[in-house]
Every structure is written in C-alpha cells, then in structure tokens.
Amino acid sequence: MHPTSHDFKANAHRAMRDEALQGALATLKKGFRAKRGVAVERLPEFEALRDAGRDMKNHVLAHLDHYLELFEAKVLAQGGHVHWARDAEEARRIVLDICRASNARTVTKGKSMVAEEIGLNAYLEKNGVRPVETDLGEYIIQLRDEPPSHIIAPAIHLNRGHVAQAFVKAHPQYPADRPLGEARELLDEAREVLRESFVTADLGITGANMMIAETGATIIVTNEGNGDLTQTLPRVHVVLTSIEKVVPTMEDATTVLRLLARSATGQEFAAYTTFSAGPRRAEDLDGPSEFHVVLLDNGRSNMLGGAFHDMLRCIRCAACINHCPIYGAIGGHAYGWVYPGPMGSVLTPALIGLEEARDLPNASTLCGRCEAVCPMRIPLPRMLRHWRGREFERHLQPGRVRLALKGWSWLVRHPTLYRLYTMAAVATLGMLGKRRGRFTSMPMAGGWTNTRDLPAPSARRGFMDQWATGRRR
Image 1 (cartoon, rainbow, N blue to C red):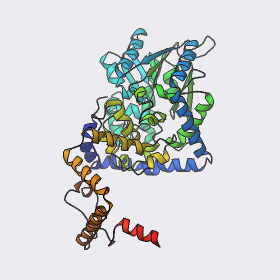
Image 2 (tube, rainbow, N blue to C red):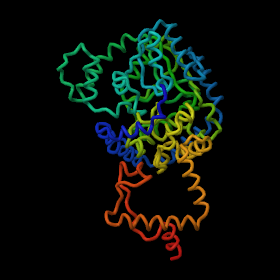
Image 3 (cartoon, helix red, strand yellow):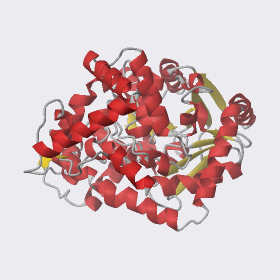
Image 4 (cartoon, one colour):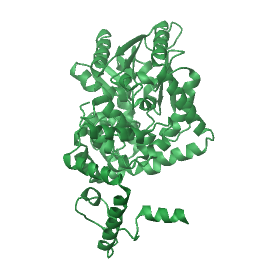
C-alpha cells in the first residue's frame, strides 16, 4: 500500500466530521473494550500469562535465527517449501511466481495484514491473477476498494447500509430490490457468492498468527470458516507471514492463544484455531498438494536489539487500538497506512521511515492505556516518545513547533521561573474565564478548542504549589 500518513492531520479532521464513522466507532466502547474486561476478570492467571508471553517472546527474539531455521527444517521435512523475502517487492514476486508455476488464475485469501502491508492484491491483479478476499470484513472493503480500518475488524467503520450498497453494486446476479437490511441477509448472500470462489480457486493464501518451530506448523485464528476453506480446498496453500511470528513449542503457542482472543474480542478462544503442517499426505482425505511459507522481513530485522525491539512481541490482537482514545475519535483510515492506533504509530515509522510517518508518533495522548492492556506488555508510550525525540533531532517538525519546544525545555529546567510562569498563567486564565468557566476559542490553542472546550482554571495556585503544600501537611 502507498503510505499517505503525511495527510494525517487532514484525515483526522475529516474523520471527526464524519457522522457515520463516529457512530460506528462508538461500538468500540460497548463492544471490544467491555468484553475484554469481562474475559480478563474471569481468568485469575491472566497477568501471569502476560509475563510468560512476554518472556517467551523475548527469548525467541534473542534467538530468532535459530528458531526460524528450525521451523524451516521442519517444513521441508514434511514436504513443504519455505521462501525468504527481504522486502515487500521480493515477497510479492515470490507469491506471483508460485501462482504462475501452478497456473493459478483465481486466488482465495484469508485475512492477512502482511498481505495488506505489501500491497499484494493490487500486484496480483496487475499481473493477471484475481484475488478474492474471503473474510467477510475484508471482502466488504475489497468491494469498496478500501484498505482495512482495523487489524481484526477491517470494516468496523461501515454500517449495514454501506454493506448493502456494496453488495447491490457487486452482485448484479440478484434482484436489485432484494432485502438487505438485516445482518443475516447480508451474511447469507456473501456466503453464497464466496462459495463458488472457494470451490474454483486454484490457490489459497492465508496469514499466520504463529509458526511453531518444533513442529513446522502454522496457526491461524479466525471466527469464520473461511480460513479453513481457503487453505484446504485449493491445490496450493501459501502462508504469508512475518519473521517475528515464530514460537518455540506447542506449549508456547497455547500461552499466546490464551491471551490472544481475550485481548482481541473478549472471547476465551476464537471459533476456529487451525493448524497447518505441510501438503496433503497419502492417507489424508483433503488438503493442498503444495504447501509454501513466505517469510517476510521488510525492516523487522533492523528493529532487533534497537529502541523498537519490544514492538516485535506484538501478536496483533488490537487491544491497544480498541482502548486508544485517538483511534476511538478518528478510526483507522486517518493513520494513512496498514497499521493504525498505538501499535501502528510505533511500527509504521520503523517499516516505511519516519519521514513518511512523522505525524503518527504524535497521534497519542500518552495516557498509557495501550501498555496497560497489551498482553505482551509492550511499552508503547516509551517508544512513541522515542520517535518524537528522533523527529525533533531530524528537524522534521515545523519551525514554530521546534521553537516552542525549545522554549518549554528551557523553562522547565528553571523551576523558579517555571512556577512563576505557571502561576501567572493560571491566574490570568482563571480571571478571563471566570464568567463562563471555559474557553470555546483561544489564540494559539485552536487545535484543542476547535473540537472541545478548555475548562478555565478555578484554583488560585498551580498544581506544583498545591502538591507541595499537601506534602508539608
């Protein structure tokens, strides 16, 4: 996908004015967030599992070459093929070569954020291969020619009316006036249309939530049967995933699985947890005759041992996205690339460069919710601050912002002047806002007051003085 994150501010303003989007985003609060809370409360050992998951992933990343080579050996021993891709271009070419070698013209796809990352669909179409998304959310946004707005709920920004319009346009074989007002009606039509693709596809592509080094198996976690149909019905199965998804053992995989669904959707387990290990054997009743795994680096090895090393523990559960107040206000498309929310604001600059994604590390209140809910205990706020520091060092911010930051930095290093300044500011704002109790507009603060009121200070003294007085008591 072509990054557009340099338009983040314009995208964000447009998103906040989109009433349909705002209505769709409201479901986050009563959906994923609430369900996660209930699921976590029902598992007393959840915090211990978080520690175990973090430690396991840290161990894997410290020995990543070993576990990847072990995984490759196991896949090869079972008759599969492993392909190594340094970047998006190489990964796309490998997948296309597999399609051409198998004379594939139609490809079914399970949901894969890595496929979105490398822009696979557009590349295949350009080269004469028709990809068909089979995850319902991905199928809907494919019909609308849109990128996903969420990593586990790609069509969360849409309502039933949007979906019905897309189906009427894309499915001319049905009467135009057919009823599509209910979710069940939409689901039945999608199932009927996709069934033909499942049966006729020459090749199936899935992602992988994990790769197990000791067995050479890959795991996909879904709530629809499309993943199983995509990898068992076609004669060729291609797993497209990234190098950090490997885990040592089946036991380690179960640790992650116990964290994943609870953190993502509030389920104890997803409806389908499917293991794939090599092509169909002589005694197997079904399965592909060819099995390929494409392992993508695309900048991840450069993150090892650096400031963003911890980001490689991410299991793509979207808990940080679901709890982020910024994402909750603007949705995923405003971020301008594949990965939105806090995890995307850290990962995207590492993958496409800070120059392209300089606005994203600033798309955070640093409230800490993301780290608090992350099942892998990834210190997202710390890494966001690190990106902001690099942005400042590279002079990527506007001159007035840099000047303001320099002034603030100087002021906070002089405590007496800082306290005098803040006391004067509190007193002035309190006096000016005394009548209304808030400011609806303010010079140089339009970024705040354009979308919310600024409460007028009611205390005569600033926080520092009140805190010092409290300590003396």
